[in-house]
Amino acid sequence: MKPNKNVVSLAIILLLLIGCKTLPATPTGLVTEKAMVVSAREEASKIGVEILKKGGNAFDAMVATEMALVVAYPFAGNLGGGGFMVYRKSDGTTGALDYREKAPLSATKDMYLDSSGNVIPDMSTVGATAVGVPGTVAGMIAVHDKFGKLPLEEIFAPVIALAQNGIVVTQKQAEHFEAYRDEILEVNGGSTTFPIDAKPGDILKYPVLAKTLQRISEQGRDGFYKGETATSLAAFIQQNGGFVTVEDLAEYEAIWRTPIAFNYKDLRIISMSPPSSGGITLNQIFRMMEPYKVSKYGHNSEKEIQLFTEAARRAYADRNYYLGDPDFVDIPKETLLSDAYLKKRMESFSFKKATKSSDIQEGNVQMAESMETTHYSIVDHEGNAVSVTTTLNGAYGSKLYSDELGFFLNNEMDDFSAKAGVPNMFGLIGAEANSIAPEKRMLSSMTPTLVERDGKLWMVVGTPGGSTIITAVAQTILNAYEFNMSMQKAVDAPRFHHQWLPDVIMFEPQGFSNQLKDELRSKGYNINEERTPIIGKVNAIRILPDGHLEGGADRRGDDTAVGF
Ligand code: GLY
View (cartoon, rainbow, N blue to C red):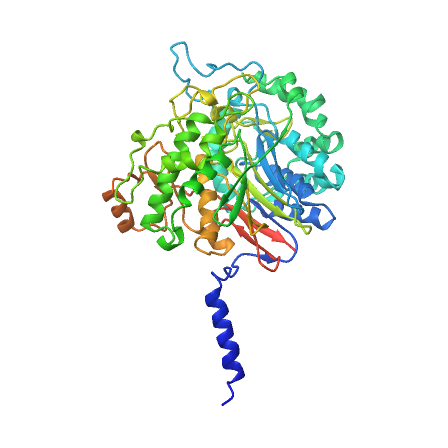
Protein backbone atom coordinates (compact mmCIF):
# COMPACT_ATOMS: atom_id res chain seq x y z
CA MET A 1 0.00 0.00 0.00
CA LYS A 2 1.27 3.42 -0.99
CA PRO A 3 1.72 5.76 2.02
CA ASN A 4 -0.80 8.60 2.08
CA LYS A 5 0.88 11.88 0.98
CA ASN A 6 -0.68 13.90 3.80
CA VAL A 7 0.47 11.43 6.44
CA VAL A 8 4.02 11.59 5.09
CA SER A 9 4.03 15.43 5.13
CA LEU A 10 2.69 15.45 8.68
CA ALA A 11 5.35 12.97 9.78
CA ILE A 12 8.08 15.10 8.20
CA ILE A 13 6.77 18.24 9.93
CA LEU A 14 6.60 16.41 13.26
CA LEU A 15 10.15 15.10 12.85
CA LEU A 16 11.35 18.60 12.01
CA LEU A 17 9.59 20.01 15.06
CA ILE A 18 11.12 17.38 17.34
CA GLY A 19 14.52 18.01 15.76
CA CYS A 20 14.27 21.77 16.20
CA LYS A 21 15.02 23.17 19.64
CA THR A 22 11.93 25.36 19.91
CA LEU A 23 9.98 27.33 17.38
CA PRO A 24 10.32 31.10 17.85
CA ALA A 25 7.47 32.54 19.92
CA THR A 26 4.49 33.80 17.93
CA PRO A 27 4.52 37.60 18.09
CA THR A 28 1.88 39.30 20.22
CA GLY A 29 3.13 42.90 19.91
CA LEU A 30 3.01 45.17 16.88
CA VAL A 31 4.72 43.52 13.89
CA THR A 32 6.14 45.61 11.05
CA GLU A 33 8.18 44.76 8.01
CA LYS A 34 10.97 47.31 7.86
CA ALA A 35 11.46 49.70 10.76
CA MET A 36 10.22 50.49 14.24
CA VAL A 37 10.48 52.97 17.12
CA VAL A 38 9.27 52.04 20.62
CA SER A 39 9.22 54.86 23.16
CA ALA A 40 7.38 56.20 26.20
CA ARG A 41 4.96 58.30 24.10
CA GLU A 42 3.14 57.68 20.85
CA GLU A 43 4.00 61.20 19.61
CA ALA A 44 7.72 60.55 20.02
CA SER A 45 7.58 57.11 18.35
CA LYS A 46 5.61 58.64 15.46
CA ILE A 47 8.11 61.46 14.96
CA GLY A 48 10.98 58.96 14.98
CA VAL A 49 9.17 56.93 12.30
CA GLU A 50 8.40 60.08 10.29
CA ILE A 51 12.13 60.79 10.11
CA LEU A 52 12.80 57.19 9.02
CA LYS A 53 10.16 57.50 6.29
CA LYS A 54 11.82 60.70 5.06
CA GLY A 55 15.01 58.72 4.42
CA GLY A 56 16.67 59.23 7.80
CA ASN A 57 18.45 56.35 9.49
CA ALA A 58 18.16 55.03 13.06
CA PHE A 59 20.56 57.73 14.28
CA ASP A 60 18.49 60.55 12.78
CA ALA A 61 15.41 58.93 14.29
CA MET A 62 17.20 58.80 17.64
CA VAL A 63 17.70 62.59 17.63
CA ALA A 64 14.06 63.16 16.62
CA THR A 65 12.65 60.71 19.19
CA GLU A 66 14.78 62.01 22.04
CA MET A 67 13.84 65.63 21.29
CA ALA A 68 10.14 64.73 20.93
CA LEU A 69 10.26 63.14 24.39
CA VAL A 70 11.37 66.52 25.80
CA VAL A 71 8.03 67.90 24.60
CA ALA A 72 5.74 64.93 25.17
CA TYR A 73 7.31 63.33 28.25
CA PRO A 74 8.91 65.99 30.49
CA PHE A 75 8.77 63.43 33.33
CA ALA A 76 12.08 62.05 31.96
CA GLY A 77 12.57 63.23 28.36
CA ASN A 78 15.04 66.06 28.58
CA LEU A 79 17.31 68.82 27.40
CA GLY A 80 18.53 69.29 30.98
CA GLY A 81 19.73 65.72 31.63
CA GLY A 82 21.86 63.06 29.98
CA GLY A 83 21.95 59.48 28.75
CA PHE A 84 23.64 56.57 27.02
CA MET A 85 23.27 54.99 23.60
CA VAL A 86 24.46 51.60 22.33
CA TYR A 87 24.33 51.00 18.58
CA ARG A 88 24.78 48.19 16.12
CA LYS A 89 25.08 49.15 12.48
CA SER A 90 23.71 46.92 9.73
CA ASP A 91 27.29 45.74 9.03
CA GLY A 92 27.54 44.38 12.59
CA THR A 93 29.86 47.07 13.99
CA THR A 94 28.93 48.22 17.47
CA GLY A 95 29.70 51.21 19.68
CA ALA A 96 28.36 53.35 22.49
CA LEU A 97 27.92 57.00 23.33
CA ASP A 98 28.16 58.46 26.82
CA TYR A 99 26.31 61.76 27.18
CA ARG A 100 25.99 61.44 30.92
CA GLU A 101 25.90 64.63 33.01
CA LYS A 102 29.06 65.54 34.90
CA ALA A 103 29.94 67.39 38.08
CA PRO A 104 30.58 71.14 37.71
CA LEU A 105 34.16 72.43 37.88
CA SER A 106 33.51 73.81 41.37
CA ALA A 107 32.34 70.43 42.76
CA THR A 108 34.07 68.90 45.78
CA LYS A 109 33.93 65.49 47.37
CA ASP A 110 32.10 66.74 50.48
CA MET A 111 29.85 69.34 48.84
CA TYR A 112 26.67 67.68 50.14
CA LEU A 113 27.94 67.21 53.74
CA ASP A 114 27.44 69.56 56.69
CA SER A 115 30.24 70.63 59.04
CA SER A 116 29.70 67.41 61.06
CA GLY A 117 30.15 65.31 57.95
CA ASN A 118 26.48 64.36 57.61
CA VAL A 119 24.61 64.34 54.31
CA ILE A 120 22.48 67.52 54.02
CA PRO A 121 18.92 66.34 53.28
CA ASP A 122 17.57 67.21 49.79
CA MET A 123 20.68 69.12 48.68
CA SER A 124 21.63 66.53 46.02
CA THR A 125 18.02 65.73 45.07
CA VAL A 126 15.90 68.90 44.99
CA GLY A 127 16.45 72.27 43.30
CA ALA A 128 19.49 73.92 41.70
CA THR A 129 22.12 72.46 44.04
CA ALA A 130 21.32 68.98 42.65
CA VAL A 131 21.97 69.89 39.01
CA GLY A 132 24.86 68.31 37.09
CA VAL A 133 26.12 69.69 33.75
CA PRO A 134 23.58 68.48 31.13
CA GLY A 135 24.83 66.20 28.34
CA THR A 136 21.79 65.48 26.15
CA VAL A 137 22.27 68.12 23.45
CA ALA A 138 25.98 67.28 23.11
CA GLY A 139 24.94 63.63 22.74
CA MET A 140 22.43 64.38 20.00
CA ILE A 141 24.89 66.51 18.06
CA ALA A 142 27.67 63.91 18.41
CA VAL A 143 25.37 61.20 17.00
CA HIS A 144 24.23 63.42 14.18
CA ASP A 145 27.78 64.50 13.28
CA LYS A 146 29.00 60.91 13.14
CA PHE A 147 26.10 59.01 11.63
CA GLY A 148 23.29 61.37 10.62
CA LYS A 149 21.94 61.49 7.08
CA LEU A 150 19.30 64.22 7.18
CA PRO A 151 20.02 67.88 8.02
CA LEU A 152 19.51 68.76 11.68
CA GLU A 153 16.83 71.29 10.79
CA GLU A 154 14.78 68.66 9.00
CA ILE A 155 15.03 66.35 12.02
CA PHE A 156 14.02 69.10 14.45
CA ALA A 157 11.15 70.45 12.34
CA PRO A 158 8.43 68.00 13.50
CA VAL A 159 9.60 68.32 17.11
CA ILE A 160 9.36 72.11 17.03
CA ALA A 161 5.92 71.78 15.43
CA LEU A 162 4.88 69.41 18.24
CA ALA A 163 5.96 71.95 20.87
CA GLN A 164 4.11 74.72 19.04
CA ASN A 165 0.91 72.80 18.26
CA GLY A 166 0.80 70.93 21.53
CA ILE A 167 0.41 67.44 22.93
CA VAL A 168 -2.69 65.88 24.43
CA VAL A 169 -2.36 65.08 28.15
CA THR A 170 -2.94 61.38 28.84
CA GLN A 171 -4.48 59.95 31.99
CA LYS A 172 -1.11 58.68 33.19
CA GLN A 173 0.57 62.00 32.46
CA ALA A 174 -2.08 63.86 34.46
CA GLU A 175 -1.48 61.43 37.33
CA HIS A 176 2.25 62.22 37.19
CA PHE A 177 1.51 65.96 37.26
CA GLU A 178 -0.76 65.49 40.25
CA ALA A 179 1.78 63.32 42.09
CA TYR A 180 4.61 65.86 41.73
CA ARG A 181 2.55 69.05 41.75
CA ASP A 182 3.44 70.16 45.28
CA GLU A 183 7.18 69.51 44.87
CA ILE A 184 7.30 71.38 41.54
CA LEU A 185 5.43 74.33 43.02
CA GLU A 186 7.66 74.33 46.09
CA VAL A 187 10.83 74.54 43.98
CA ASN A 188 9.53 76.99 41.35
CA GLY A 189 6.82 78.93 43.14
CA GLY A 190 3.20 79.31 42.12
CA SER A 191 4.04 81.48 39.10
CA THR A 192 5.78 78.62 37.24
CA THR A 193 4.83 78.46 33.58
CA PHE A 194 4.96 74.65 33.62
CA PRO A 195 1.33 73.52 33.17
CA ILE A 196 1.23 71.38 36.29
CA ASP A 197 -2.56 71.60 36.71
CA ALA A 198 -3.32 70.15 33.26
CA LYS A 199 -5.98 67.46 33.09
CA PRO A 200 -6.42 64.46 30.77
CA GLY A 201 -7.41 65.63 27.30
CA ASP A 202 -5.94 69.12 27.68
CA ILE A 203 -3.65 70.29 24.89
CA LEU A 204 -0.32 71.60 26.13
CA LYS A 205 1.71 73.96 23.96
CA TYR A 206 5.31 74.84 24.78
CA PRO A 207 6.22 78.00 22.75
CA VAL A 208 9.28 78.84 24.86
CA LEU A 209 10.66 75.31 24.52
CA ALA A 210 10.00 75.54 20.77
CA LYS A 211 12.32 78.58 20.63
CA THR A 212 15.07 76.76 22.56
CA LEU A 213 14.74 73.79 20.21
CA GLN A 214 14.89 76.17 17.23
CA ARG A 215 18.24 77.56 18.44
CA ILE A 216 19.67 74.02 18.73
CA SER A 217 18.28 73.13 15.33
CA GLU A 218 20.00 76.17 13.75
CA GLN A 219 23.25 76.32 15.74
CA GLY A 220 23.86 72.72 16.81
CA ARG A 221 25.65 72.37 20.16
CA ASP A 222 26.38 76.10 20.32
CA GLY A 223 22.62 76.65 20.39
CA PHE A 224 22.67 75.11 23.87
CA TYR A 225 26.19 75.25 25.31
CA LYS A 226 27.01 78.81 24.22
CA GLY A 227 25.22 82.11 23.63
CA GLU A 228 21.67 82.90 24.72
CA THR A 229 20.71 79.45 26.04
CA ALA A 230 23.93 78.91 28.01
CA THR A 231 23.89 82.42 29.53
CA SER A 232 20.26 82.10 30.59
CA LEU A 233 20.70 78.55 31.90
CA ALA A 234 23.83 79.20 33.98
CA ALA A 235 22.38 82.42 35.42
CA PHE A 236 19.13 80.65 36.30
CA ILE A 237 20.87 77.74 38.05
CA GLN A 238 23.17 80.08 40.00
CA GLN A 239 20.35 82.48 41.00
CA ASN A 240 18.71 79.45 42.57
CA GLY A 241 21.87 78.50 44.50
CA GLY A 242 23.34 75.92 42.08
CA PHE A 243 26.84 75.46 40.71
CA VAL A 244 26.72 75.09 36.90
CA THR A 245 28.49 77.97 35.08
CA VAL A 246 28.82 79.07 31.43
CA GLU A 247 32.31 77.57 31.53
CA ASP A 248 30.90 74.20 32.64
CA LEU A 249 28.46 74.28 29.74
CA ALA A 250 31.06 75.34 27.17
CA GLU A 251 33.38 72.50 28.20
CA TYR A 252 30.87 69.65 28.15
CA GLU A 253 31.67 66.86 25.65
CA ALA A 254 29.90 63.59 24.90
CA ILE A 255 32.31 60.62 24.78
CA TRP A 256 32.31 57.62 22.41
CA ARG A 257 32.94 54.43 24.41
CA THR A 258 33.48 50.75 23.74
CA PRO A 259 30.45 48.80 24.91
CA ILE A 260 30.58 45.75 27.19
CA ALA A 261 30.00 42.63 25.08
CA PHE A 262 29.72 39.03 26.34
CA ASN A 263 28.22 35.66 25.47
CA TYR A 264 25.36 33.97 27.30
CA LYS A 265 24.74 30.51 25.86
CA ASP A 266 24.16 31.22 22.16
CA LEU A 267 23.44 34.92 22.64
CA ARG A 268 25.89 37.80 22.36
CA ILE A 269 24.82 40.67 24.59
CA ILE A 270 26.13 44.20 23.96
CA SER A 271 25.48 46.80 26.64
CA MET A 272 26.66 50.08 28.15
CA SER A 273 30.10 50.41 29.65
CA PRO A 274 31.10 52.65 32.60
CA PRO A 275 30.25 55.25 33.77
CA SER A 276 27.14 53.12 33.56
CA SER A 277 27.23 50.02 35.71
CA GLY A 278 24.64 48.43 33.39
CA GLY A 279 26.87 46.38 31.09
CA ILE A 280 29.28 45.05 33.71
CA THR A 281 26.54 44.12 36.17
CA LEU A 282 24.42 42.52 33.43
CA ASN A 283 27.48 40.58 32.29
CA GLN A 284 28.15 39.31 35.82
CA ILE A 285 24.51 38.27 36.41
CA PHE A 286 24.25 36.36 33.12
CA ARG A 287 27.61 34.64 33.45
CA MET A 288 26.83 33.56 37.03
CA MET A 289 23.53 32.07 35.80
CA GLU A 290 24.93 30.46 32.66
CA PRO A 291 25.94 27.07 34.16
CA TYR A 292 22.30 26.43 35.22
CA LYS A 293 19.44 25.02 33.16
CA VAL A 294 17.30 28.10 33.66
CA SER A 295 14.56 27.15 31.17
CA LYS A 296 13.86 23.93 33.08
CA TYR A 297 13.05 25.77 36.31
CA GLY A 298 10.06 27.61 34.81
CA HIS A 299 9.40 31.31 34.48
CA ASN A 300 9.33 33.18 37.82
CA SER A 301 9.54 29.82 39.61
CA GLU A 302 11.09 29.57 43.07
CA LYS A 303 14.33 28.21 41.63
CA GLU A 304 14.64 30.85 38.91
CA ILE A 305 13.98 33.62 41.44
CA GLN A 306 16.57 32.16 43.81
CA LEU A 307 19.25 31.79 41.15
CA PHE A 308 18.61 35.26 39.71
CA THR A 309 18.53 36.85 43.17
CA GLU A 310 21.79 35.28 44.25
CA ALA A 311 23.56 36.31 41.04
CA ALA A 312 22.16 39.87 41.35
CA ARG A 313 23.12 40.06 45.05
CA ARG A 314 26.75 39.29 44.22
CA ALA A 315 26.87 41.51 41.11
CA TYR A 316 25.38 44.59 42.86
CA ALA A 317 27.86 44.22 45.75
CA ASP A 318 30.65 44.54 43.20
CA ARG A 319 28.87 47.35 41.36
CA ASN A 320 28.60 49.50 44.42
CA TYR A 321 32.22 49.12 45.40
CA TYR A 322 34.22 49.02 42.20
CA LEU A 323 32.37 51.03 39.58
CA GLY A 324 32.60 54.71 38.77
CA ASP A 325 33.71 57.05 35.97
CA PRO A 326 36.46 55.15 34.11
CA ASP A 327 38.25 58.43 33.38
CA PHE A 328 38.75 58.88 37.15
CA VAL A 329 38.96 55.38 38.69
CA ASP A 330 40.65 52.10 37.76
CA ILE A 331 37.90 49.52 37.41
CA PRO A 332 39.23 45.92 37.73
CA LYS A 333 37.08 44.95 34.74
CA GLU A 334 39.10 41.93 33.62
CA THR A 335 38.86 40.35 37.07
CA LEU A 336 35.23 41.22 37.68
CA LEU A 337 34.22 39.63 34.38
CA SER A 338 36.55 36.61 34.46
CA ASP A 339 35.06 33.11 34.55
CA ALA A 340 37.25 32.13 37.50
CA TYR A 341 36.10 35.10 39.60
CA LEU A 342 32.41 34.61 38.82
CA LYS A 343 32.60 30.87 39.51
CA LYS A 344 34.15 31.60 42.88
CA ARG A 345 31.46 34.20 43.62
CA MET A 346 28.76 31.55 43.17
CA GLU A 347 30.50 28.85 45.25
CA SER A 348 28.52 29.90 48.33
CA PHE A 349 25.18 29.63 46.47
CA SER A 350 22.78 26.81 47.31
CA PHE A 351 19.11 26.30 46.40
CA LYS A 352 18.57 25.21 50.05
CA LYS A 353 19.09 28.56 51.72
CA ALA A 354 19.40 32.31 50.97
CA THR A 355 22.86 33.86 51.19
CA LYS A 356 22.83 36.84 53.56
CA SER A 357 23.90 40.12 51.96
CA SER A 358 25.91 40.79 55.13
CA ASP A 359 28.03 37.75 54.17
CA ILE A 360 28.68 39.11 50.67
CA GLN A 361 31.24 41.84 50.56
CA GLU A 362 32.79 43.08 47.43
CA GLY A 363 34.51 39.99 46.07
CA ASN A 364 38.08 39.87 47.24
CA VAL A 365 39.58 41.88 44.54
CA GLN A 366 33.32 45.05 46.59
CA MET A 367 25.94 51.62 45.84
CA ALA A 368 22.31 53.96 45.36
CA GLU A 369 19.67 55.75 42.42
CA SER A 370 15.53 57.05 40.91
CA MET A 371 13.04 55.05 38.92
CA GLU A 372 12.18 57.84 36.50
CA THR A 373 14.29 57.53 33.45
CA THR A 374 13.03 56.61 29.95
CA HIS A 375 14.18 54.20 27.25
CA TYR A 376 13.52 53.92 23.53
CA SER A 377 14.54 51.33 20.96
CA ILE A 378 14.89 51.85 17.20
CA VAL A 379 15.58 49.61 14.21
CA ASP A 380 15.67 51.17 10.73
CA HIS A 381 14.97 49.68 7.30
CA GLU A 382 18.71 49.15 6.70
CA GLY A 383 19.05 47.08 9.88
CA ASN A 384 20.82 49.71 12.00
CA ALA A 385 19.75 49.56 15.64
CA VAL A 386 20.01 52.02 18.52
CA SER A 387 19.19 51.41 22.15
CA VAL A 388 18.95 54.62 24.18
CA THR A 389 18.25 55.38 27.83
CA THR A 390 17.99 59.00 28.90
CA THR A 391 17.19 60.66 32.20
CA LEU A 392 16.74 63.65 34.47
CA ASN A 393 17.27 61.15 37.35
CA GLY A 394 14.17 61.78 39.47
CA ALA A 395 10.73 62.48 38.00
CA TYR A 396 11.08 65.99 36.50
CA GLY A 397 14.68 65.82 37.79
CA SER A 398 15.46 68.40 40.45
CA LYS A 399 11.95 69.84 39.77
CA LEU A 400 13.69 73.10 38.80
CA TYR A 401 12.03 74.42 35.61
CA SER A 402 13.42 77.28 33.55
CA ASP A 403 10.53 79.52 32.44
CA GLU A 404 12.91 81.30 30.07
CA LEU A 405 14.00 78.12 28.30
CA GLY A 406 11.05 75.79 28.83
CA PHE A 407 12.60 72.65 30.35
CA PHE A 408 13.45 70.86 33.63
CA LEU A 409 16.95 70.41 35.07
CA ASN A 410 18.33 67.09 36.30
CA ASN A 411 19.14 66.05 39.88
CA GLU A 412 21.83 63.69 38.69
CA MET A 413 24.36 64.81 41.34
CA ASP A 414 22.48 62.40 43.63
CA ASP A 415 23.83 59.47 41.61
CA PHE A 416 27.25 60.18 43.09
CA SER A 417 28.01 58.70 46.46
CA ALA A 418 27.73 61.83 48.64
CA LYS A 419 29.24 59.87 51.51
CA ALA A 420 30.51 56.28 51.43
CA GLY A 421 28.01 53.90 53.04
CA VAL A 422 25.02 56.27 52.96
CA PRO A 423 22.23 55.16 50.59
CA ASN A 424 21.04 57.53 47.86
CA MET A 425 17.39 58.02 46.80
CA PHE A 426 17.32 54.48 45.29
CA GLY A 427 18.71 52.90 48.44
CA LEU A 428 22.01 52.17 46.70
CA ILE A 429 25.04 52.32 48.95
CA GLY A 430 28.00 53.99 47.28
CA ALA A 431 31.75 53.83 47.70
CA GLU A 432 34.90 55.79 46.97
CA ALA A 433 34.93 54.87 43.27
CA ASN A 434 31.77 56.95 42.83
CA SER A 435 32.75 59.89 45.03
CA ILE A 436 32.34 63.44 43.69
CA ALA A 437 35.13 65.24 41.80
CA PRO A 438 35.10 68.18 39.37
CA GLU A 439 34.08 67.09 35.84
CA LYS A 440 33.55 63.47 36.94
CA ARG A 441 30.51 61.55 35.67
CA MET A 442 28.26 59.96 38.28
CA LEU A 443 27.72 56.19 38.16
CA SER A 444 24.53 55.09 36.43
CA SER A 445 22.45 51.94 36.15
CA MET A 446 21.16 52.74 32.68
CA THR A 447 21.44 49.63 30.54
CA PRO A 448 20.65 50.25 26.88
CA THR A 449 21.30 46.83 25.34
CA LEU A 450 21.40 44.95 22.04
CA VAL A 451 21.34 41.18 21.70
CA GLU A 452 22.62 39.07 18.81
CA ARG A 453 21.53 35.50 18.22
CA ASP A 454 23.49 33.32 15.78
CA GLY A 455 25.48 36.41 14.83
CA LYS A 456 22.41 38.43 13.80
CA LEU A 457 20.64 41.26 15.57
CA TRP A 458 17.87 39.68 17.67
CA MET A 459 16.76 42.24 20.25
CA VAL A 460 16.99 45.93 21.19
CA VAL A 461 16.06 46.49 24.83
CA GLY A 462 16.22 48.85 27.81
CA THR A 463 14.14 50.45 30.53
CA PRO A 464 13.93 53.17 33.17
CA GLY A 465 13.91 52.15 36.83
CA GLY A 466 17.05 53.43 38.61
CA SER A 467 18.77 50.54 40.30
CA THR A 468 16.08 48.14 38.99
CA ILE A 469 17.03 48.84 35.37
CA ILE A 470 19.68 46.13 35.21
CA THR A 471 17.50 43.35 36.62
CA ALA A 472 14.51 44.37 34.45
CA VAL A 473 16.64 44.24 31.28
CA ALA A 474 18.11 40.89 32.32
CA GLN A 475 14.66 39.39 33.03
CA THR A 476 13.27 40.62 29.70
CA ILE A 477 16.10 38.90 27.82
CA LEU A 478 15.66 35.72 29.90
CA ASN A 479 11.90 35.76 29.31
CA ALA A 480 12.37 35.84 25.56
CA TYR A 481 15.35 33.47 25.39
CA GLU A 482 14.90 30.92 28.20
CA PHE A 483 11.09 30.94 28.30
CA ASN A 484 10.49 31.61 24.62
CA MET A 485 8.07 34.51 25.11
CA SER A 486 7.09 36.92 22.38
CA MET A 487 8.64 40.39 22.74
CA GLN A 488 5.42 41.89 24.07
CA LYS A 489 4.91 39.07 26.60
CA ALA A 490 8.53 39.26 27.73
CA VAL A 491 8.06 42.99 28.40
CA ASP A 492 4.69 42.62 30.13
CA ALA A 493 5.66 39.69 32.40
CA PRO A 494 5.79 40.48 36.16
CA ARG A 495 9.25 41.40 37.45
CA PHE A 496 11.20 41.17 40.70
CA HIS A 497 14.41 42.83 41.91
CA HIS A 498 17.30 42.35 44.34
CA GLN A 499 20.29 44.71 44.66
CA TRP A 500 22.40 43.29 47.53
CA LEU A 501 21.40 46.04 49.96
CA PRO A 502 18.76 46.41 51.22
CA ASP A 503 18.67 42.59 51.54
CA VAL A 504 15.13 42.14 50.24
CA ILE A 505 13.49 40.81 47.12
CA MET A 506 11.10 43.39 45.72
CA PHE A 507 8.17 41.93 43.75
CA GLU A 508 5.77 43.78 41.49
CA PRO A 509 2.24 43.94 42.93
CA GLN A 510 0.77 41.31 40.60
CA GLY A 511 2.01 37.93 39.44
CA PHE A 512 3.68 36.32 42.45
CA SER A 513 1.63 34.04 44.71
CA ASN A 514 1.66 34.09 48.50
CA GLN A 515 2.68 30.44 48.45
CA LEU A 516 5.76 31.27 46.38
CA LYS A 517 6.67 34.11 48.74
CA ASP A 518 6.18 31.83 51.80
CA GLU A 519 8.46 29.22 50.28
CA LEU A 520 11.14 31.84 49.67
CA ARG A 521 10.73 33.17 53.22
CA SER A 522 11.19 29.67 54.61
CA LYS A 523 14.61 29.60 52.92
CA GLY A 524 15.65 32.85 54.54
CA TYR A 525 14.72 35.40 51.85
CA ASN A 526 13.36 38.75 52.99
CA ILE A 527 10.39 39.89 50.93
CA ASN A 528 9.58 43.57 50.65
CA GLU A 529 5.90 43.85 51.48
CA GLU A 530 5.83 47.60 52.15
CA ARG A 531 6.90 48.82 48.76
CA THR A 532 5.72 46.92 45.71
CA PRO A 533 6.07 49.42 42.89
CA ILE A 534 6.04 48.62 39.22
CA ILE A 535 9.55 47.74 38.10
CA GLY A 536 10.69 49.41 34.88
CA LYS A 537 8.93 50.34 31.66
CA VAL A 538 10.76 48.23 29.10
CA ASN A 539 10.66 49.24 25.44
CA ALA A 540 12.07 46.59 23.15
CA ILE A 541 12.15 45.23 19.60
CA ARG A 542 12.66 41.58 18.54
CA ILE A 543 13.85 40.74 15.05
CA LEU A 544 11.85 37.74 13.80
CA PRO A 545 13.39 34.98 11.68
CA ASP A 546 11.86 36.46 8.49
CA GLY A 547 13.32 39.90 9.27
CA HIS A 548 10.05 41.42 10.46
CA LEU A 549 10.12 43.34 13.74
CA GLU A 550 8.02 42.75 16.84
CA GLY A 551 7.63 45.61 19.31
CA GLY A 552 7.36 45.24 23.05
CA ALA A 553 5.91 48.49 24.43
CA ASP A 554 5.46 48.31 28.18
CA ARG A 555 1.84 48.08 29.36
CA ARG A 556 2.92 49.84 32.55
CA GLY A 557 3.08 53.27 30.84
CA ASP A 558 1.84 55.12 27.74
CA ASP A 559 4.64 53.41 25.83
CA THR A 560 3.92 52.77 22.16
CA ALA A 561 5.49 50.95 19.24
CA VAL A 562 5.14 52.55 15.79
CA GLY A 563 6.62 51.27 12.55
CA PHE A 564 6.14 50.37 8.91
N1 GLY B 1 19.67 58.27 37.26
C1 GLY B 1 19.46 56.91 37.02
C2 GLY B 1 20.65 56.23 36.44
O1 GLY B 1 21.47 56.89 35.86
O2 GLY B 1 20.82 55.07 36.57
